[in-house]
Image (tube, rainbow, N blue to C red; front, side, top):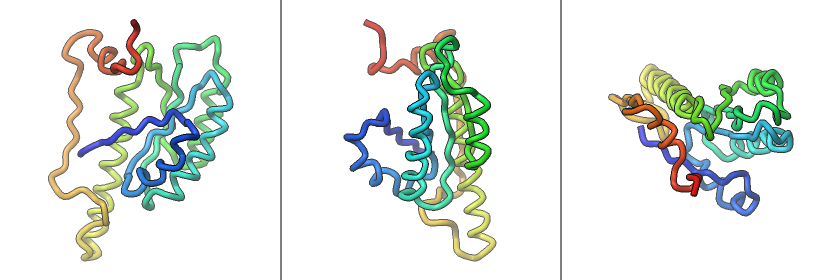
Amino acid sequence: MKAQIWDTAGQERYRAITSAYYRGAVGALLVYDLTKAATFENVERWLKELRDHADGGIAITLVGNKADLRHLRSVATDDAAAFCEREGLSFIETSALEATNVEKAFTQILTDIYRLVSRRAMEGAAGGEGGEKGGVGGGTSIVVDAPAEPGAAKKRAMGACCQSV
């Protein structure tokens, strides 16, 4: 499985090009800042845009980030979970700073994608169609390596864009 990750940080200047990247996507992580209610309120708009432009039946995980800032939380976990239940999304809270649940979020969306693509392939085979357009061929596997050393996950989570100076 090949994953392309595009992080627009919700910036309006990227809205014109995002629809091009939605086409052919089979999964997406929608991330909001759980310390800023406005970012959670924008999730509904991003979800609609994603569903409007992506091919049908896309796996989506809602990610509440900055879980380490408990004292600044402005979006309740229950509110986000209820939204996901209503919209049929997976849900997880993470802390990029502490590298908490970051790998789990990616593992979760990749697992959801794998299940979705496998189901499509089985339905296509049963219907004699040979699979769904944009689907992954047989023999696809997902391998998630454990961190090689303590702190390795945090180092990987903090790419060049967000390392401390």
